[in-house]
Structure formats: C-alpha cells, structure tokens
Image: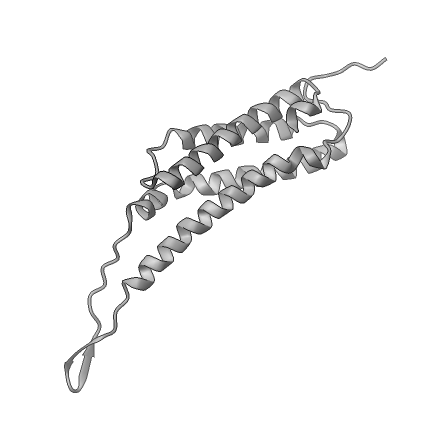
Length: 163
C-alpha cells in the first residue's frame, strides 16, 4: 500500500515534459539577443571620427548616446530578464536534483517563483514595438501557464499536467 503525498512524485518526468520549458528559454534568449543587438548597433552608429581643430591637435567630439524607445524600455526593465533567466535555470536544476530524491518540493517552489516573475513582467508597461511586445506577452503568458501546470502537476502527482 502506498500513500501519495503532495509534492512527492514517484517517477521522474520524461524528457518530453521539459520541451515547452526549453522552447520558452529559447524565446527569452532570442528576445534578449535582439534587444542587445539593437543596443550595440545604436552605440556603434553614434561613434564619429575625431574632429581636427588645428594642424597640430585633434579633439574628440562630445559623445551623446541616444537610445531607441525599445532600448530604453529594455534598460529600465533589464532586471526582469535576469530574473526570468535565473528562474528557468533554477526550475531545470531543481527538477534534475529532485528527480534523484523523488521529492519535488523545491522544484514546485522554483516553478512558482518563475510564475511570479512572469506575472510581474506582464504588469510592466508595453514594449514600444508592437511585434516585440506581442512576442514578449505571449512568452510571459506561456511561462505563467507552464508555472501553474508545473506546480499543479507536482501537487497532484500528475506528470501529464507538467508535460
């Protein structure tokens, strides 16, 4: 006779159950790369050659860095990207660690933290680029749904809720 306890899962999650998580990790990475690349292009484009004042001296122009609205948004909310990335890494690490013990309590907590940070991201002002905002909003929705399924699946001892 076996007693099923919340937070305890007897069989490890199949690798397919992590497919959605890795897709979300990839989408987040692509958004971060896109925002970083836009930042690099802007800062490279603003560099200019020194101006000659007299035949014997060269003076570098005053540099003023202007950022696009998307870059400003990304800079203002960069902590969220770090938190989501850390959360996703933590979920994967906790699932792997908890698989050895069969007690998925810490994985459930990691999933819940990911959901909290995704919810906080959904409350941010929109990205001032419609395409990026749509993709970002979808990613946050997926992370929240995945987090809820992860916690519920662990709590109900139902691997199908996680996959």
